[in-house]
Image (tube, rainbow, N blue to C red; front, side, top):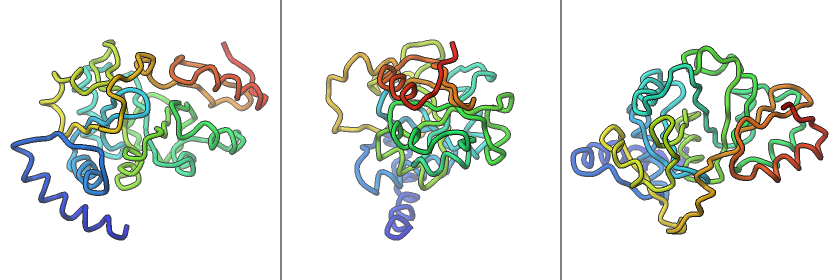
Length: 237
């Protein structure tokens, strides 16, 4: 872990100090990465910007975090959550990829895509217990990926109540702030994000060898479909 250990040690004290006065943080540097990781390790749910919409995150291996996510979102317990990992090599730990040419995943990820695969036995059995597949993301946003590198896979869902529009600004889910352990901001983002970002990630099912199925059309759907066809995958409608 190297110098990050120092930041993590300091984050414990800082989180306690700030707990009663502020829970708004900037996504900048190892200090804020350590703060986010510490909040998650304490069982908190944290709001992160991603490469598409704002997301709510907990730790996949923490059963209480999963329960909190569903309660905060008022989400149907049978509706699965996705996971977010920090690099393509980690995907095979949680999803079955033996049938996929490696260049498919390394080409489209990181990016605005959620890849559905058959889940492996490594995944917490409490996480999406009635589903034999799992959606996996690697956002093109280094901050959230660095956090996942420290705490492990993140349970990730959009920062809005179920069946409500996706949010691209933290102010749009202000009603959820009291239930969150931290809200993180990326000040490098354009202040006028494009409306198309609200569509969220494109969800594609790659669980069946030789086939793909677009479950939700979102950001980057057209180039993704073109690429998968060039790789010889057939569409399931």
